[in-house]
Structures are given as structure tokens and as C-alpha cells.
Length: 329
Figure 1 (cartoon, rainbow, N blue to C red):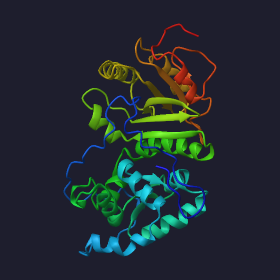
Figure 2: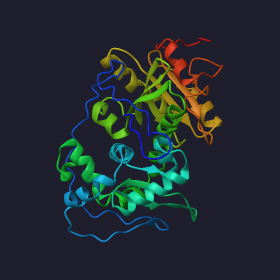
Figure 3: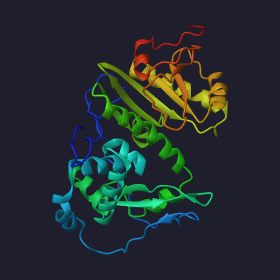
């Protein structure tokens, strides 16, 4: 995807790579399962959810009326939200805008057009930025692009309430932020591109019987490509459970015929140090880092599990053997 918007830098520099041999499984987009409309749960106390009147206007007719006002960047954003559910204002700015102000202005316009919807969760009484999801016309647009009926799209009007009430919202936003940070880097370096970004749902669809990573990506840096599986750790899982995931990744490597790097990010140095003691495996290559504010994940922040240093750039992992060697340096 290399589309140019109407203002600022172009949007996310991502490529299709549907036929890339580095991917451990087919990259064809799975057909979503039908999802019937239902009443979403009540949003948690303190959450600000913008409510719109429920009307029976035909979505296709309304979409036709606004199509000429939508840019390639708007369409790209709708596809991202279909795949990845929710993005914050800052994450939207990362993937397609020169700055936060321009992102906020365009998002407000897309909200007014009913292309996007939004909610603002509160933590400890303090408001946080808007979180953006597909609105009715955004869902209709994505469905039209895929040649399916909107009813067959994995979207429902209550999605904004479901996400606002979800205990996994912070995890979803956090893991999406890892990938949007890579896209931000690609937009400032013409030699870099996030070739693939698979959601947690797509990974589960492809490999759910074997392992369930939080994401899958292919990062290309000046001709060097690194396929990787991503684990976004918030420090809530016991270490034995964390270590047990590696057996699933070993099974995936055996089925694919080759291993891929598994990247773990942690909320802080202490959790990383504790986890690294159990994240070694004879087959699965693992690298770790922490998530300080403003993390730039393609830079020299990655420490392979079988090494003590120095930390490496993301693309440098591609030059290392993909079979761990305990005791290596």
C-alpha cells in the first residue's frame, strides 16, 4: 500500500507481499465469518462514547454521497481499522499524517461523515485521546472494496461499545502501537517498509490450533527482510506460561519448514530480565526489548535471548542464525 493523501506526508508505506516466501503461511485474506448485529455491553463507568441516532437510511446510498470526499489515505485508514479494530489519534498520525493536528482535523471530518466512530476511555478519572473505529460508512466502504455484503463483514454498530468495555483494550492498543511505530519509521526512511502486518485475529485464523501470536510482520530495511512473530507482554502472565508459548512456535516452525524470530516487548527492564531467564529454546529464535515512551522498534533495542549484548537493530536479527545456540555470544 503506497497511497498519497491530500495533505502532509503520504500514508503508511506498506506493501502487499501476498506471495512473499518469507511468510510462514498463506497471506490470502481470510473470508470473515458473518457476525449478526447485537446490543453491545454497557461501556464502563467514566468512558465517553459518542452516541449517534440509529436510523434506517441505506448505507450504500449514503456512501455514494460521500465517496468523492474520501482520499486514498481515508480508504487506507478504513482498511487498517477493519483489520486491527482500533487506533488512537497518535497511531493514526503515525500511519498517514505529518502531525497530530492534521490527523485530528481529518479524523473529525471522517467522524462527521459517519465514516469513523470514536470513544474516549478514562483511566483513573483522567481522559485519554480518542480511540477510532470503523463507522457505518467506513464498514460499507470496506465491504464494497472486498465485494461482499456489509452484513458479512466482521463489523457491528456496537463495536465502539464492545471495545470501550473490553478488558483487553489496552493490550490491543499497545500491540497496534508497536506496528504503527514501525510504519512511522518507514515514512521517514525511504529504504524501510513494513511489508506485512497481520492482526491477532488473522494469526489466530491461520495458526490458532498451534500458536496464537499477537501479530505477525515482515520488516524490510534497505533490502534486508525480517519475518517476525510478535508478543506484547504486559507483565500479567506467569513466566512458565510465557515460556510454554515457545513450544507452540517450535511446532509452527516445523510445519512451515523454517523458524521465524519471535519478538517479545515488555513494560519495563525488570520484567524483561525475569522473562529472559525462561525464553530460551533450541529451535525458536527469540529477541526482547522494553517499551519506554517513544519506542522506535527498528533501532538498536533488540537483545537476542542467547546473547548478553550489544543490542541490535531489528533488521540485524535477519543476519543471525535462526536456530538458537545456548551459550552463544
